[in-house]
Length: 435
Image (tube, rainbow, N blue to C red; front, side, top):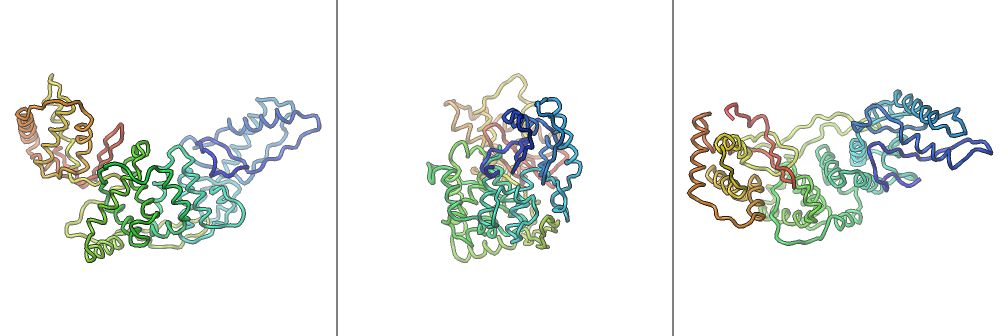
């Protein structure tokens, strides 16, 4: 059988390492082989549609008619699979290796657990880890880590799944430890797959504080020009802007963003301070006692502080100071009436509101407005009408909520722009009942 990592993975697919059929001399072998494949493919497992991934050490099905009766074969396999699934235990429980059937919450969960063991320098010895990675024979950590990345790439989310796994591991371990496990030639090959190493003018991405800390750690360990640092930056770009994959701009955005990070830490003294801050703001693993089949739940804490403690860090997206800007759509809906405002007019209106609220022109919250301006047909916008609408919105907000525009707009959060959605996320700390 081919390695699992080299195949396209589907949620309900079945992969068999070795199969043995005991047949009579006159049995139709080709027909029964087809029946075997079909029976495995059509059987269902509890929780599988929600993503649960099962691993069976063996599956025994007996007393199958050699005439290939489809109904009997399907029923027999379904009963055998359901019986084995009923005995399955969570793969991360202590002693799971003694069971002949285990399951993970998802294939992503299995891959992330495997990577965490590799980073913790724990050799996976339980029988099911070989099936998770798809690698047989002598254990070699770099080859196993490469196989896991390839397996994630074979899932429908592709690079998004890889990015999620890498940053999940980074939150529990030092990111440098993971990058050291992955072979340099593999990382270079993945960079070539992600697109051209240079592109036209692109706007750098402002990463969240946690992602910035991971990137600074990679820069400190491998250097700003290394393949490891660039690949990690590419994964950060993919998490924030998935559309960059189809646009083939991932590497160009990563390079531009890294240049901005380096420029922000231009002087040796500032850079040293930033790197120390990055290290102290890392999420620390309190207990690194990780055993085969048992990943201990660790107490995570964020050390490091600032003068004004900000809300908790958001998991993904670009940091913005104006996460409340689009709350004003509620005011527009009530004020617009029969008048329909064009997209370009709305974009310029939100630009004006944001700037008056003290939001920087390059803040990610205005990425939609910039996109509309660049892609819209030329249109003459009445600036007097813009001022009138700004006044209408300001008065409406004060009259109905006794709240000013800067109070509404200036809220820390995270924003992600894709081809179809603009997602803004705020913490509960930023909630205001008046809005």
